[in-house]
Image 1 (cartoon, rainbow, N blue to C red):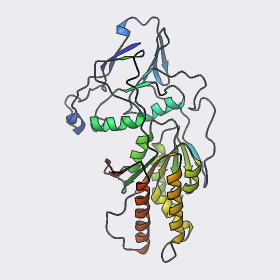
Image 2: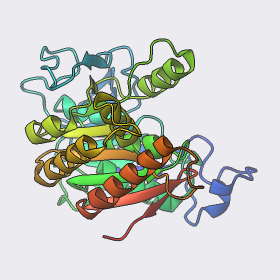
Image 3: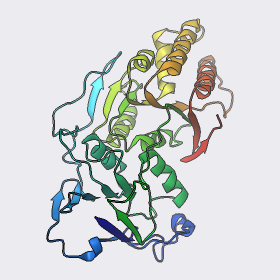
Image 4: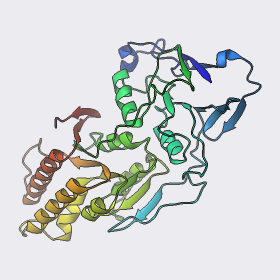
Length: 358
């Protein structure tokens, strides 16, 4: 099957005529609104055309498969499975129909998908076996929802997708030169201040993964409505097929898990550990130092893929209280050690990402 992309942008194109936003002003390769021609526009009388919950599926007479992933699986996906535990994760859902892989599922050869709208849709396709390592995943519907072409390319590297210029012909029979492997370092540490965008960056990096366990270290604080609202906002933006685990036993988790973990975050973990040992000044903080050392050892030895969020607190004034100074010193030292033992780390400021050299 040959797929001619005469346009790869959103409905208004990129840049959008008359738009004065910074994204449209930065565009160096203009794109026309999305349009596609299949097999030289011959009548598709012998093709199987199907509208599915994932989008428009086209299967050629020879079995080659194309998906324009413009569907909405928000009602079909399993709601975020929420687990509360202090030590380890229980088993997730296994039955078909809940977003898990379907036995005998046939991967698509080409997937055209608007990843700026819902990158988690791609994770769902992977989870159900409809996208694999041989699928050509091409981002379409491109527009000023991306801050820039460079930022779009950065995101697509995490998601294992590519862009192509208008006028590109994709061929299911061609060599797989347009298949991009996902780049997921073993350990990633994201540092940032309050409201810096560090949690959103962590979620973005893993949005297209088929399986993610979100590790929440914050106490529910049921008597604090404002804190509850923050937690609910975090929960609402996670992909539906992610699992959530509430725990502060990160050492056990890192030594037993082998999947993909998003840990948010180390600051709330440290606070809980100080609380658990009653180690706030003037108490002895040695038990907390031991916990941090054990976490670092588990971080070094883990076989899981981790993206962890942590607070950067060393750029402000000296805290006026002993408790504030203790927390600053402990989290700062922990961050230094974890960054050294991470394949990738970055500082997030005002939603902008500054990679830190290894």
